[in-house]
Length: 433
Image (cartoon, rainbow, N blue to C red; front, side, top):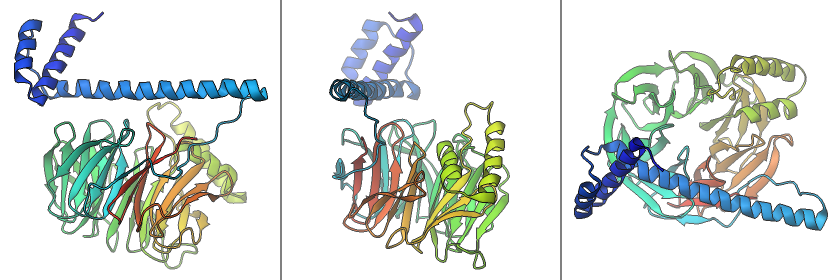
């Protein structure tokens, strides 16, 4: 069934698993019995874990499809037609409520491929949970102060974290160990995000700067200056060429990743509709959302202009299969309880939701269909906004946490939403229709 190369890799993977688990007698007996002469390395440790996750994921998909097929057959028998599926949206009660950390949850982020959600806390820890099974997968400790933000590497099983201790750490999730600690910021580090397929890490700080760090060497490649106050959050565009930053100075800036040049500055006291308080969070739209916003939110000359720019962008990336042409718009949330949507091409405000929440807007994320975006707030709620229906409120979940909701993230591999709060808890919400 297996080629000699595949058999050799399987044997090495089994040996690596036994080695990690401490089953030395079994490992030695298996090595002798299988006649394995090569030594295992770190890559072999990942094979069984990654394939096991893939199998579990496929089993879940099969079960879901079988249930869906059964329902469709019932609909045809009962009604003679197939009922249209509804979109996956979060609903109460929470699937899981995790309380392994002893202080405020500052950030929640899902793995790009698996339903693993990492949470950072002011207790200086990072905990990784399986949002499907409810199991605790990993606990990481090493920072000396609050961990403010975490980011998953887009291709490796790695996490970057930043802290009020002014350091950035890189973690190998397979080993649960810190592989590198980077210092360079002169104050509290607020946010980290990977750029250019994980080649670089962008970080921002209360020292008013943004730094671009080589993820392999840990060397600082650039220190980017432009904001006049604490830089609070960063977001990378889907085309991987730009990133946006927001600050206590009430401004948003869009930069090139390659050279760190500021192309657009958004906001200011003289700009109508701009944020009038600290901007807390940012989120780029995806390709599907770009089309919906142009069709349903924009009017007249603005619509014509954005439609033209969208077509040019679509054509630019037509031959680049790995590049998402999305990101024509940028969404922001702030302490003024407002949510703004901007053109990332011109920097103009194209849509505003005044009084989106009853308190600070703390987190934003896109829905995979592009029809919706989600927001969370210090008013303890999570809201879903419908872009196809003119940016109207589609769904509201009150009292999602006992105290402020600080962060939300959507799982790309399964229909889950995660949220973190000041109540020291991480909640996972089932979003299946």
